Length: 303
Image 1 (cartoon, rainbow, N blue to C red):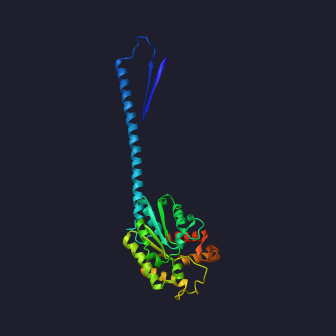
Image 2: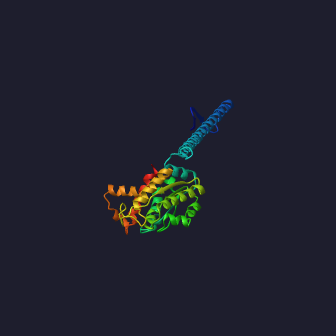
Image 3: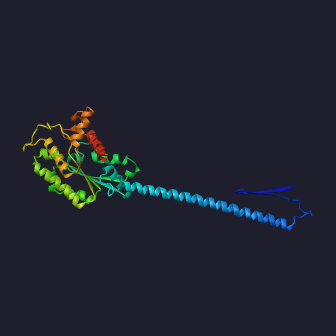
């Protein structure tokens, strides 16, 4: 009977056949046995070295892949850095903030529409819907939080008088969306010069106290309770006059601005929707109206 021993390592192969007949006198010479043991030891060493070299190679490849991924991530973040991209859109700005901060804060300030008046539930108001839509953009936006500061029936004059902007400043926001509450200015007969002065005061207060924050100004939603073009208030202004003056002010000051009034009207006309169908009592947005507002804001982010 005989035993066969085979060892493979890389290209080394050694086969030894040894007689196993115990008790016979034809023992293997000592020098041959020594040679076999030496060859076996060398083979084991080569096998160990091959395994070690292979392990080092795998580790090196993994380390390089991690380094490459980190470098690519850093380059991507730099491409979104507001300091390097002063003209970037708000979507890229929020993306950058979400990648470099634990939480991204958006504060919204305004009147009845911002307060969610007309919505069947607070979660259907445009502020909460806007937050949900941002989360749907991907995992990078899951840390975005919206703080809503809406005050029913407040005009910009009352917002200034009661210094409601302090609520926004306390949030230390990355982005402020300021709805100018124009219907209440119209309905409460706030003079046009005072309206523009109040809007400017609120914007300047945010700029001064939260200098790193972006500010997005919006007009208010369309109404159907009166003719926007023809019905004047007690001081001779139509609702459209207030929207037009705000638009001109934003253009003059070079503020980021969404004429939500015009954008919603354009969408309704395009989709053949009656204005009255998304309003309660001719002034307050229904759930569908708040949804349209949200869509217009999302469209603006990438512009």
